Image (tube, rainbow, N blue to C red; front, side, top):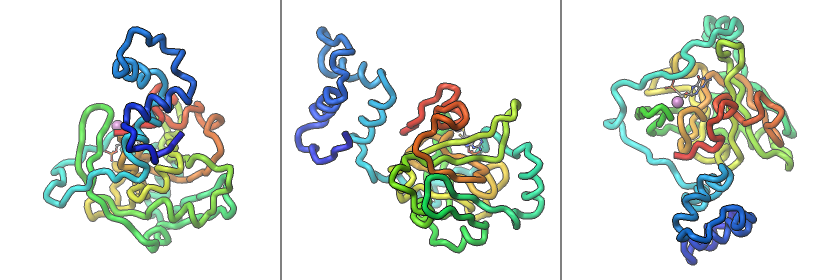
Length: 258
Ligand SMILES: Nc1nc2c(c(=O)[nH]1)N[C@H]1C(S)=C(S)[C@@H](COP(=O)(O)O)O[C@H]1N2
Ligand SMILES: [Mo]
């Protein structure tokens, strides 16, 4: 389905062909619709089609726009949890995260842990990008961190692995912990980093200390803060509410493309 070789035949034809291949053509009752009306409806039908269509429109490794220092927002508001109500987290934070360790495991050949010092010693990437929250605000910030791809390469996902799940420290009022997930396209994307600096400072508590995910082609809620553990999985149906993320379990789309 993710075939990018057909670009010469025109986007719509490619998309329609794709929908036909997915067996969706007869589900839509589209006889009286023009192709574009029909396709707009189809896009609304199922998220998986939206996701695939988006992947065709923006090729796999398309980069999110990057900005310059002069574009940095004077104020970058924190959102969601700003200080996890979690005794273990508070203890580690009070100790400057000296004994914090990121666990990376799951369906991998070589589970590993990384201290903050070890993460900082890995090759890093710095990027100035715009964060878009689903609530309707945006802000431009500068992020430095370790590309997630190289960490995954070290733990060696097994062939059955399909998603990467981020388990966070912050519970909601019911004690449910925040979590998120990505597929391997986004996990290995060059702009997907585990950020430990924001605007040239150690990542502030409100923005996810000690590390938070940046996944620049998707909306704010995908950018998990307070990441404690990374789990490579075949499926996320048995994690949390089964939809691949804290907000997804409450109805948000799993693929939050901008
Ligand atoms: N662990 C965790 N990650 C989270 C959230 C949260 O509440 N907890 N909120 C999400 C939402 S909706 C947004 S817009 C961004 C906000 O990032 P910021 O606080 O750096 O602005 O974090 C995302 N990641
Ligand atoms: Mo958000």
